[in-house]
Image 1: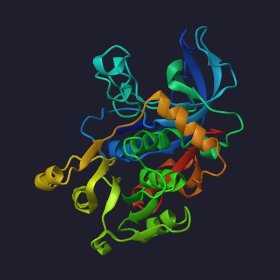
Image 2: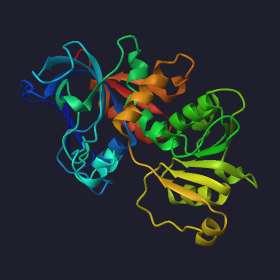
Image 3: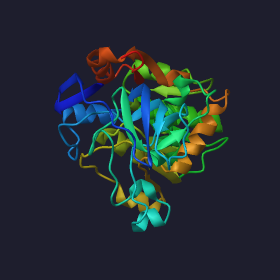
Image 4: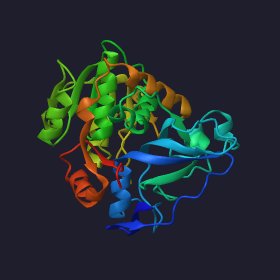
Amino acid sequence: MFELYLEKPTVLKQREAAAAPSPKDNEVKIRVIYGGICGSDLRVYKGSLPYATYPCRPGHEILGTVIEAGKNAPQKIGTKVVSFPNTFCGECEFCLKGRTNICKNKKSFGVTVDGLFAKEVILDAKYAVPVPDDLANERAVLTEPFAVNVHALKKANVGPGTSMAVIGCGAEGLLSIALAYHLGADLTVLDINPIKLEKAKSFGKGIKAMHPKDITDELFDVVVEAAGVKASVEQAMQIVKPGGAVIALGITGEEISYPALRITRSEITIFGTIVYTLKDFADAIEYLKDPAFNVAPVLSQIVPCAQFQQAFEDAMSGNHAKIVLNFEGV
């Protein structure tokens, strides 16, 4: 069976592995169609994610078809599914409050346990989320990264007339822009890369796009920090309105200076946000089913899986949004 294999940081290979076994009672076997390359995949590849384990099979965003199902699995053979790649125990204090995204015992596919970039994979049935047959594969494969933004934007009251800035126009930033535009927000987007700014503007009319240094005295009701770098986190705190909210979507291990006095005196709310719940997946699928919801600018390339080395290099260049590997035919 074909799979990708990360021996250690920067040493990514394809190899023939043992065939996936038959699923257990609560499992399904999935034949992978598409696999999206995520920013966390790139950090694992580069060795910059401190809690990643090696060696491992990378990848966590997949779309596929159920080809075998255990006797207790609710999915039928032929069901199209996407992966829910952050496990939860269902028993810890956070799971019992419905906050499965911060489960004490969470494991992340392709980071702390083997991932999903293979011709066939086995999943616990609860982590294989069905998607409608008539939802185009190019939209369905975005369910997992989009659910991150569905979860994040629920934290602030984003709607018609909300002034909102998004800092960082990578794939997650673009998905925030897509959702905020769909919800009617007045959008300003910031990035140092003009190629990404052009992508951001393509979601619709009225989106202002600029270099972070070009913002002057404008303030925003909501600021989404999606770049995950020190300068953009600190800028987010500077450009949010009194009484406004900062959504910390980007991930960084850098030490950040927070303007404590301004946060207190201006009643600024800072929302941490990480991944999603199954409800967020359901909501993401509903958005993606709507033909009026534009996510086309997010998908940059779909390339044969055999071209994985070039795909990872392109993803790291910073000039692309979502790059997807096509596992069909391997």
